[in-house]
Image 1 (cartoon, rainbow, N blue to C red):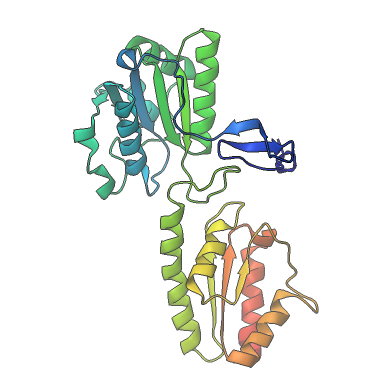
Image 2 (cartoon, rainbow, N blue to C red):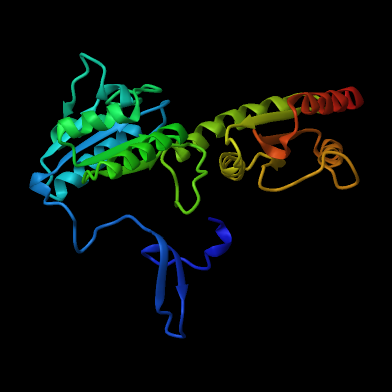
Length: 296
């Protein structure tokens, strides 16, 4: 699927097309989450489970809390948490945790995961065996790339066995690198924390003779954190992100621009997303060593 197939978006769908002057929307795919007129399950008969996997991410407890709140709003009373990721499905001594509004009311005030996390786990067939034995109807999986691959495998195995189990995957990434999503949870916190590093680099660079502050931020293959943090701080002169190509050398290269900044204002701050230009760290170090030697 490529972004080129998306022409417009409607209030209910990320892929939609306006087909007439009155703008009648034809929804194509990727429907937005939200209340629906008809629901498949009888809420009072549903058993829903929540599991958090992989590393920690700001906002995990907020998501757990809101899932519980929303399920109870729909009338679901049997809600459980699976402790310590997929391991909670098979590890002896790890028992599922009954969840309710009263129990999760204030967990958003604490960091980490209320349910605990872990990496890896048992075979997909063993997880589905456990889901079947526990009579789980809905499984909410909070995690990253590997976790989502696991959730997809669980879904495929459930379909193979013709089990009526809904597997709902919630992307866990501070990088905001999921197409068609307005914003991933944890992203705002990442941007806020990144600004602290930028502010420190700004103070160091401004205080030094011909100082250059260099901040490298996470993002994997996306520059959302670097871009938003740079715009929010108002202190970054150059922001390099993987979505925009650039040249280090040449008449319009980054190094020449930095040279001009040093001449005009005496210092500069550079923010680099980790995959920007796929430039090796050695190249960046040598480039800045070159500037230090010139303007020392």
